[in-house]
Length: 219
Image 1 (cartoon, rainbow, N blue to C red):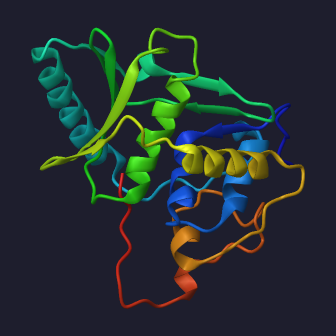
Image 2: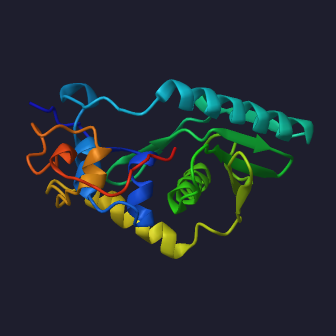
């Protein structure tokens, strides 16, 4: 039986595709936000995590060296842990890199897959959260970058506007609600969801369906 958390906890990457409209099932994020990870069975990922990790690590190293050569002090992954406590839940995440200058900072996430709107939203959430923490990044003028192997996308300083903050806040409230979010099962989303049918009886078994296209994950 899944054990409820004492207080809802939301990891940034659980919500980026929902905010971007790339995913529709808020229930999966609600379930993870409200239940301890170790208390329920999970379906292991079926992608080649080792190959992805090697590519991601190399792009991360190259990007760090680039910013260090420009005179930035660069903080990497676990140095960048975010814990932003709201009225109803905690928002957490780890930006890949934060490059700090005299009065400015660049929040950087590296991606080895195809560009997605959710990648930009991930950086936007980091920018917003960092601007509200009490760490060394608070008070800096933060802009963002999504770095791909062949190009990068700039996320301007003022991108986390009132509409974005409102959308993020409303989603966090829905995920913290005692009432479960509505399940929106589909072959694509269920195919990438690690919650089993034991906890989600509406889960779609993709093996029962035929398809004319191949689905690949982007990280």
